[in-house]
Image (cartoon, rainbow, N blue to C red; front, side, top):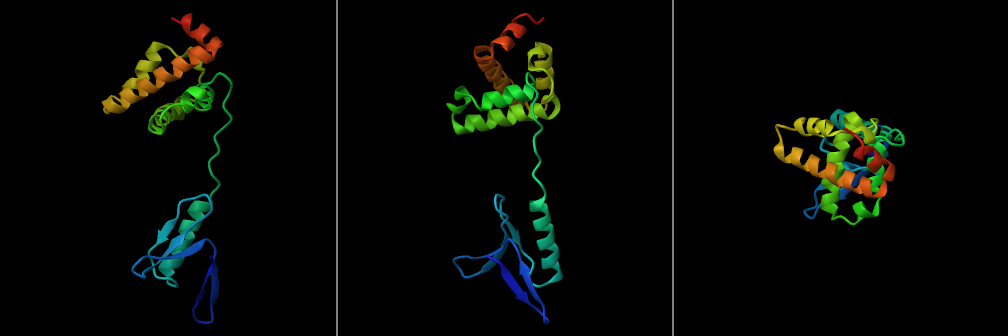
Length: 167
């Protein structure tokens, strides 16, 4: 719904602006860009504060979404993407999928392009030690890596062959 504001001989259209009325009859204004979460605007319609909040909310939502770079074959990110698409991952409970994905994606922030087949136990210890101040998160990270590589050794024979012969 597009609203119009009539001011001093002013007629403005606000794209993405929606008006919701709660059960008590209070009118609330939101920015709702398709595919995004809605953002509430608390400033009064027609004020300078409203225009500033509206502009900031629309600009924040309309920025092009960050595209993940194409994962190189054999990279840690590529392995994670394959795992997320696997039947093994799909069979997991949604909560387990969520925490595993968060744990693995946090590793991908720094190590996405590194070859997964070259990961050694010392690298796993380093990844664990990055979260030494959060032992629960470190443990979750280890569990996610264990599940990822257990799946990879079953479904990715070239990776399994490389990891058996690593020192």
